[in-house]
Image (tube, rainbow, N blue to C red):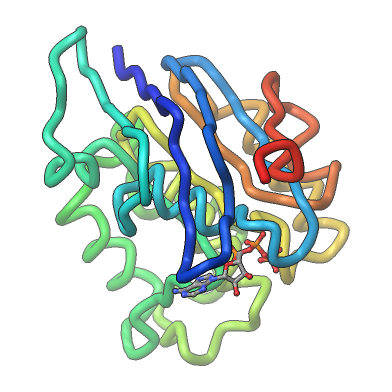
Length: 206
Ligand SMILES: Nc1ncnc2c1ncn2[C@@H]1O[C@H](COP(=O)(O)OP(=O)(O)OP(=O)(O)O)[C@@H](O)[C@H]1O
């Protein structure tokens, strides 16, 4: 059972405070929406939670069965989908999936062909990702994050570039495959985080 605690966590860039004195407890099964307008600090908070960038004061801890996980190992517990994370464009869809699953175990032993079907990308298995539309890339990013066998799934702007069908697909996917994991969604679109049981509005932590 993974548990994440933020204790009086604060972050600033130079003289700009992004969030201050944030306390948060998350355990497997929880779903959290981080909300706020453009530039409010959603992506920054997500990066701090993932360990990609440091906080300025306070602390963040990950515990697995009450045993503290060193910060250098946090990445093993999580998968992330975000607009600023790139896919290897020169790889074909099948190659991207094979490559990804060299590092993360597939969730519920999902096979590449099943995943491709779930992402409704069957027609594009051998196409290089550089030739994918932005919506196809977004479905792939979401699929890789959600179908990694990790207890923490981080989604930044999950429905950006998705059309109506894509948004319905995302909503259905989250309802079926969250499982017993922690899911954090950064968003200012209510439809992206309707399923989240906890909400954190960054405006409250300035
Ligand atoms: N590396 C950095 N150095 C300095 N300032 C930064 C850095 N990264 C982000 N910021 C600033 O932090 C603030 C929050 O940015 P962030 O990207 O976290 O917001 P956001 O809520 O995710 O925005 P959006 O909804 O537009 O994606 C912004 O003012 C941004 O300019």
